[in-house]
Image 1 (cartoon, rainbow, N blue to C red):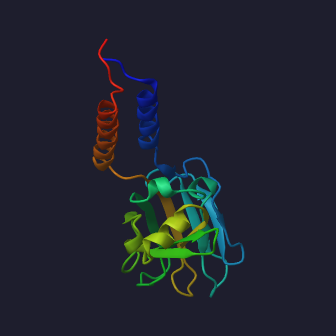
Image 2 (image 1 turned 30 degrees about the vertical axis):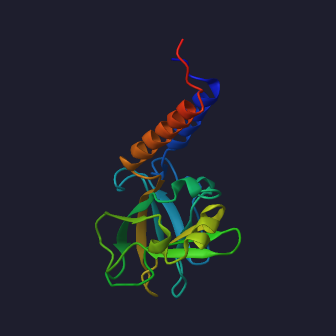
Length: 211
């Protein structure tokens, strides 16, 4: 059976789409391009004590000012390929009161068009031990319509994480921040569906011939 070039190209295109890897900051060797508001916080890289290895250390430099860190370019731009995937991070409260602060652990995505979507990943008081928090990258989970969600993901201009515990002088650690595509086995099922559709169309159009 001959496999036409057009069909072969389609298979390669589908394979390339589904080989999209997760975006991760492990902070093993540095801050990896993460930035912050200098007036409200001091951010340093700790070479050990993370989950595991290095991590981003943020602490208050003044009271009453929020502590935010901002993701580097690899988490920005067009992220529509990660729609339906997962955003996750490891957080630890290093100093300060263990109280329930609604905004602590809030991730905000801002599109180049000014639209925003926010999600509080940490529900309840923060922990003094490393804990993993995650949220599905689905419009409903971020409180916006699918149209707004798609518009934001098409060109993210800023991704922020808030790590402020009230107006107290406090410190937190951030590690293993990631954005992952649709988890397995869903991706394999979609891949198989795509290949099957290509073969079915080719057969109906007589593109598949026997030698």
